[in-house]
Amino acid sequence: MTRKQLIQQIQLKRSYLCVGLDTDINKIPAYLQTHPDAVFEFNKQIIDATQDLCVAYKINTAFYEAMGKKGWEAMEKTVDYIPKEQFIIADAKRGDIGNTSSQYAKAFFETLHFDAITVAPYMGEDSVKPFLAFEHKWAIVLGLTSNTGSTDFEQLKLVSGDGNQDSEFLYEAVLKKVSSWGNTNNLMFVIGATKASDLGEIRKIIPGHFLLVPGVGFQGGSLKEVSKYGLNNDCGLFGKC
Image (cartoon, rainbow, N blue to C red):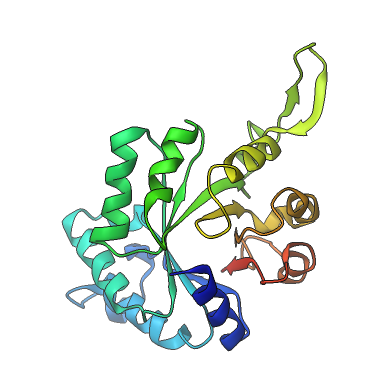
């Protein structure tokens, strides 16, 4: 999906809602448990109920991978069932180098037909660039996440060459560096909704990029705060719930 098509859908539906299909087989309603493919049937009903309200779906691949072949089949059927005008995200958090990343990209962009995949930038440019080589596909790079462990690395202050503590956080350096590898047509960033107050400063670094903002609602993220600090002229947001 192109940036133009994505913006058109947001404007048409007046929404930037992203629905998570992080489907846990153990939490599916009892009346579906006897279905031959309970995960797909559950996803199907969620999609039917929400497709006119949202612009994107995010599939956390771990819940499907844990089920082996049956899980992969349910994921593939889910992706195929989602209407083509919807933006489909593989929340796979891949991050490796060279040919390995290229194969990950082919798996999710060509075999499974996702529009985007979440990517961990820890290994540097050659772990992200292969995902940016596919036309009309997107890499969504982890920036500032909402988990408590984000303080371990992402929110560390950098130290300058003279040994003095810099004023820049590690995640800010990541945003600056990674944004130079792609552009606003193929690169997005994950910014946790529980970090909404930081979105204003983040927007100074990456004003034009789309942001995937998980954590609205149950995890404590405020839709009002996310909108206040994160919106740009093209909306530039996916609010995931």
